[in-house]
Length: 259
Image (tube, rainbow, N blue to C red):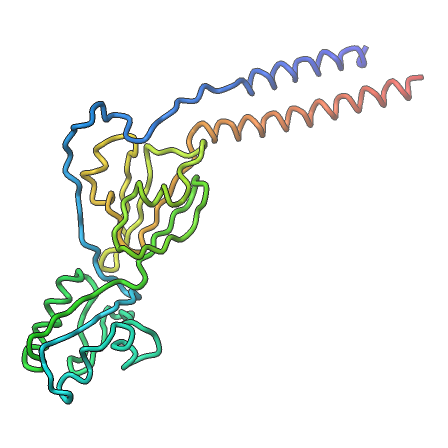
């Protein structure tokens, strides 16, 4: 009697397995899918990167001065100018947000944009160097892309300008299991962590301050509900399969010893 009930139990488990593992209909989403024509207008939020702690800056200073004694610390290639005070070709913003420059001394760089720091340096050079010009570049403009992209990792950007769409494109695009409706961007600003959420299917991203990425931003692509549901279905199927295997084994052993 008990052995006859085993196939019935196995059949019930199979019904449960197939009902819980039914195929979920996936809703496909496209980039900027709400753009319906080619002449839409939407202002792009362009923000200049803000200098942070541990940033490495190329600061090149030149002038009209021909006095070798006055301009000996300046009018140098960018790679040489920084080597005056250190081993690496750049001015490192220290843990206090400061940089040290020849004849100028200590300057607070954290929280300033490149243009703001250029103006500050020129102001301090007025009585030291005539006709000074200052050019600053980031030497460590990097973006990290993690999650459901085909090539997650760190992107080094020489142009100092990168949009969220360009970053995802460089990372190989979002996988079939990623969501583009809630892409998160983590950003550090004046020592505080900020977080923004972008919907890449909407043209509203052009108005977001997170559309234009800044150095050291982290872009996170989360799993879609489709993948979460599929993972749960796989776990359910594995448990049911394990249960069926046990029932089958018990039935076989029972029939063997019954004889």
